[in-house]
Length: 293
Image (cartoon, rainbow, N blue to C red; front, side, top):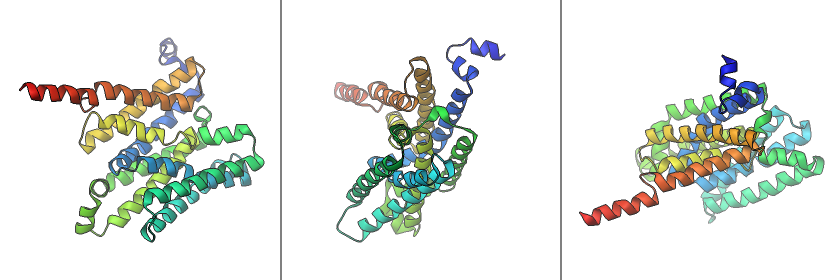
């Protein structure tokens, strides 16, 4: 059976090489956990905030690297603490000063990125810096896969339990504040979920690429449907397809796996712009039909 599967070009890398299977499994976990979070980021109009938060974890991961090297627990704990600290600090500054939340996030993002790069450079080499910034999805081991699976399971459970609350908070926070006192819980709970998934994505795709598997599938899916349920399903499907094709491209064309995955997801988004029913071209056709009638 394995020999038959190995003869199929699309499947042969995953049948023959364990590192390819691990990479695909890691991308599956990220698609199930991080991509739905990206959908809610898009609904909240906070896509760029996700990019800022992806860099906020860098100083903590860098401190963990200084203490224990490329240690999974140390860098995970450091990244979680740094990301949560930036989320709380930026939110506190936005609520207690004239600085808006986007500006507050941008300032902390710049400070965090610079501090993280500086900390890593003090001890590590350029190879270590590239590992942190761009990830190593082809080098995932059992511990990293268990971590990704655990974070994905947590995300799916929390989103399933609080789906209606997250939808209301993302689409109309003022209405949620009028009918419930759970608005702050939804906001900060979502930010915790965002940090958790960014830390998971950091181990596979690095800080610069982790947000790609969140935002690009969500943006592509939004061009096809409007309702939240189908939006989540299509976004996860796009993330899985992009991960699969991106890994194949990295294997056959000898490309870096993380950038290949994110570029493939970008290609699917561009394709959706051209052919999706809610894309700009379809919108022009619909306008023509309207005037003809």
